[in-house]
Length: 222
Ligand code: MG
Ligand code: ZN
Image 1 (cartoon, rainbow, N blue to C red):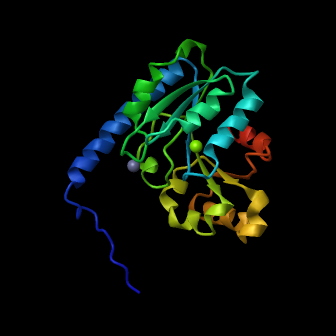
Image 2: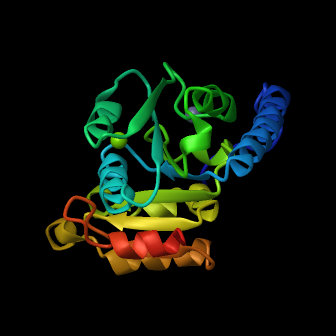
């Protein structure tokens, strides 16, 4: 079957969108400059709702909190569920509610950074809004972009979202303990990632049990 394809320039507000993306990139560069000035490493964590981003952050915090001062920016449409979960770890969390927007952008991060004592921070985890499409278009100024995908999302998540995987530095394949029950092969998902992005680091994990955490920390080169 021949699918209908959106051609470039066909969408009526394409100029508006290009302008928006350019402005976002400029703000992302400014965020990076601020982070670098304060020697803060920032990691942007992307993935669908329910894939395990918050569990991953919680587990990374439990491994790293003696060694580094950690902050978290939690993006969500309307709730504070994730921020509340992370705050229980004794970590400073800034909640960003995006309302209808399905991604964080560099301007929201700029505003959130003002809420931290940046001089006291070493490490910043940014939990992006749960989806695998537009966060890829909106760099935030982070040093690393990590995508979390879990076997419970089925076998095609990587192949259906090539753009976000092409933007990733690290990919976590989560919930590998459920792979057999889901009849989804983590190795196959990893192959799909490597086909899109041969330079990326892919790490199988179980973020609730803590499996793969050492490898993830290594991949982030702490
Ligand atoms: Mg979450
Ligand atoms: Zn969006």
